[in-house]
Length: 147
Image (cartoon, rainbow, N blue to C red):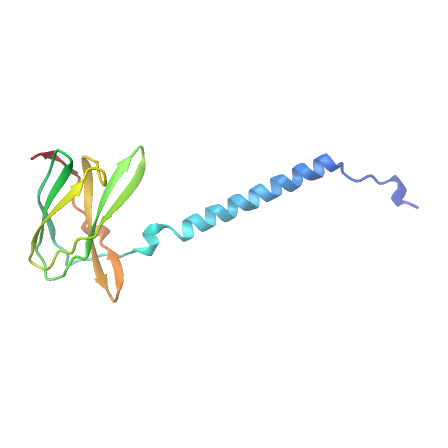
């Protein structure tokens, strides 16, 4: 027979090829799943042209950060996101504090929860029971001062 002269690949080479194939498939699945289910997709992004959130005061003292925010529009803000960058990584902290329309709200945040000195404030509103992140209405970068 002609098949007697044919040789198969060694078990070592076959094992290495199978491991390489499994690792590459795993990397593809991990990359796809991490981009498909990020927390920022859970809170849908939207442009919110009518939001007008003003930072009246932002300071720190002792173990707390104090923010004074004014909602100058007719839409209630359901929560805010404090966005900071640390070592090239963007970190978002959700502060669940409703700010009604035309309301001035003081928010105190423990330094064990949020200990950054520079950040942006992004308003989040409710629309049809969905949270809409108004990234286009983010404040300019805030640097905390001492109270």
